[in-house]
Image 1: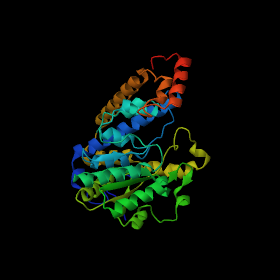
Image 2: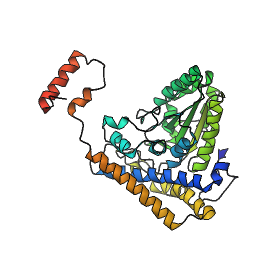
Image 3: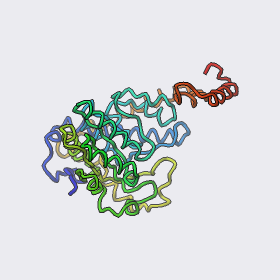
Image 4: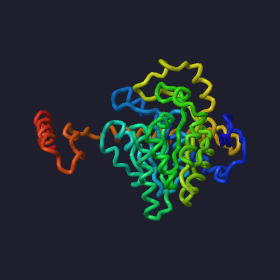
Length: 350
């Protein structure tokens, strides 16, 4: 069964959880998703004009990371993949820091958000064992905290995923793994990745609960991740949550999805996207006005544009920076190479 509270048109399909009956809570979730989408638009614009590195859009998938982040407590730990900037922003990471990360500036990883959160993970699935390790640390310390790892459907085909789930299950670790099933692992459709009927079923082999949630319904994501986190903090062990969504855009700005999927397949999914769904609900049930909508759009644009200006004003790292933070004491061979680079570029003081 797929947990869902809002239909694609914003109508209520099952009794709302208590937090979703409060207009302010819903507006907060909507604002977080709107900010994520505005960040997306700006990041793609910067990349297309050569001012940002290859970027992974979260278009149409904002509810997954925002809903998961909203369900977390401050001292829980988030392990995001490369499409979770909405959740990171919700957790306190500054837009400028994310721009710096995608721009290839190592200083972008010094996030000002929760210090225990981890920066963006680029390698597929490798962050899930790290999340299991942190969850084990919570158990050893006797702390009522939990780790949340978010990954794509392609990650569930990796050994890292299975190993982490296995150890989390056998040791009953406070870990919640959220799978953003956007139906595509770059050009590989979900149907060609696995014979499993659902990705949630992969929890069975680890002996842990697995469930599906409508990943375009931010209320459902927040509610089910919150329940899984409460269970984890209470000693009930890990949970796998498969959030069903669809990747409306390209895999990254280095991809052209039109080469492997037809626009006719994509078009119907625009009617299911999370911002339109929650906005329709706010209008119908909570009197959300055009003025409020325009004010929120203006606010998000102002925040993102200012962050982009700050990012563009940061001087680029010197070429010698590629040698920094590799070793406590740089090996002789690398020290020699660093010296050559410094001499070649005139960075004698680097």
